[in-house]
Image 1 (tube, helix red, strand yellow):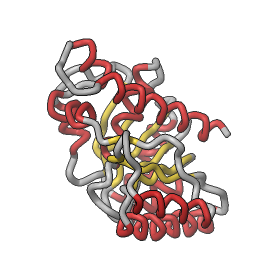
Image 2: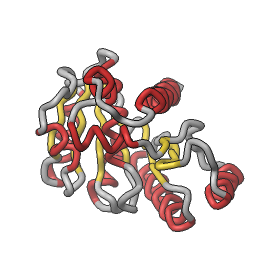
Image 3: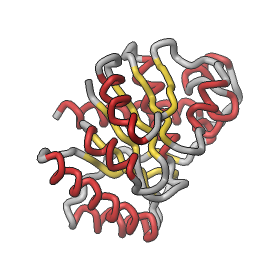
Length: 223
C-alpha cells in the first residue's frame, strides 16, 4: 500500500500539520492509515495521546530505532491502506530510509528564500535515493502557512523559479489557519472541531482547503 513521506531538512515548515491533515482526512474517508511519528519532537504522538476524536482507523505509532525503521515501514504498509511518515526536520538517515521506501514524498515549504534553498537541497536527497533504489520516487513541494488572500512577491518569485526548474508543486497551498493549530490544542480532527461547535475562525474554509490538498495528493499518487 502507498507510503507517503512528509519531509524537509528545515524545521518549522508545517510537516506535522501536513502529515496530520492528510492522515486524519484519509481516515475519515474510511481508509485505514498508520501514521509513523519519526519526529523527535513527537507532536503527532502528543496529539494522538489526547485521545479526543482520533479516527478509529488511524493508528499513530512512534518510529523505531534506525535499524528497525525499514522493517517498520514495510510491516505498516502490509497492514494499512496508507502509511504516512512524519519525519524530523533534517536530512538524516531516517529521511533517507523513508524516502527510498516511499511511493510519494511531500516537501512542505514556506515562501522564503531560505526555505526554497533547503527544499532544493532536499530534492537532491530524493534524487540520490532514486539512484540507490534504481526507481523513480515521485514528489512535490507544497507551500504552507500561506495567506488565503495575498500571495507575497517573494513567494511568487520562488514559485516561478520552481516552475522554471521543473520542480513539481501542489496547486493547493495549505493556508495559515487557526483551525490547523486548534486540532493540536484540543485534539481530534477538523471535522471533529466542526461537530463540537468549537468557535474556530473560518473552520469551513480550513476544511475545504485540507480536503483539496488530500484530493490532489490522491490524484498524484494514482498517476
